[in-house]
Image 1: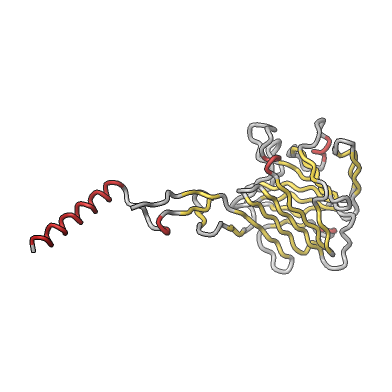
Image 2: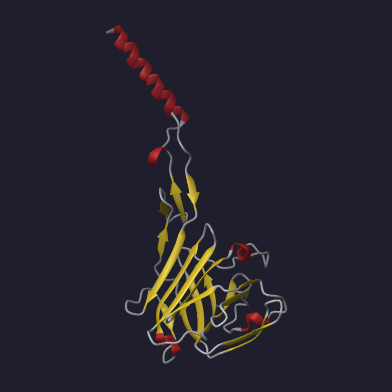
Length: 248
């Protein structure tokens, strides 16, 4: 008899907020450009560390000069969590995303750190109609030794989002990719609770375990593999049956 030991696989999480059917506690700034936000999608494959993001605005909006800064957290709103999470500055006009260590302050000044950016993603942002999106591999970013509690971009069973965006942004850069200046009238769309309901995707053949936060696969087609003592007892029982048959 043989069996395959159980294994845990990292799942992928995705969160969607729709204007027409709001799902979750997303706090959108009133009387501002934030009211043009139609759909927000955030995802993270925790096995590959690929972060996906998409912001769709109402038809007719021009997003060619938009900009944003984004912090995502596995839990509550990231505001106040310093030196643990990455802040991503998005320059839609130039398709560039620049990552720094978020200083936890309710302001955009993390880019003014005296060090070079943690990561620069060129040609990362895709524009289509009134939607911009990106998909970046955050493996190297998350693996940096920024501090003892560094997590980079982090999404799990819950999500906290600090997303500020503008329709009139302008960025300039130094030769090393560091932001030299940035401007714009930024508005917010943030989560204020423990996150919004999300969808968990597991690889084929695995199921999600909410206790461990992993996708689990079992051996023997999902059945339990007997312990050695159980196998010995099974063998003994078969032997007794065989002996009884010979006596008959």
